[in-house]
Image (tube, rainbow, N blue to C red):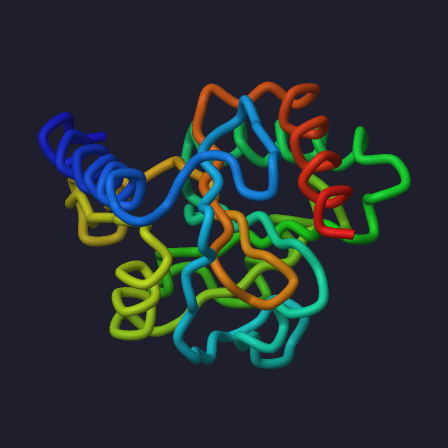
Length: 205
């Protein structure tokens, strides 16, 4: 990965998170304190969107409603961060116990040139068959990134096909009303993250 582009992506992601934290939001909604990241006192609305879903149907804002969703933006050709993070999320999912049905995991590809819904479906199933996936055209992803708070940038390779993508690594937590509830930030510790998600779900009941 290009250090310059990576620094830009990380700086952009941090700017988004710091802007949120410095605004009208606080870290402890409804008395919940977590160790895995930042929760918002007032959830942020999400604009309507339509993506290509890995299950063969469109993935829209409506698919985020009725449960908690952990969103990870990455790409299937990612050599390190993405497979590592998805492996950690698999471990988180395995530790959720009785609240597992109330938390879903979405892999959002920011590489629509190479990542078709079918490819994404096979990729996420390798880590956990319950994981979902989606992608969209560049304009939709750019708008969604600005809305959700993730950034990414294409980094040219030796050939047109060998490019990579630098992207932010924070996970976006969506509440059952399809609103941004917070951000989970690395380093990810499955035991800690699972405990935090259990506490968040319990507090919402």
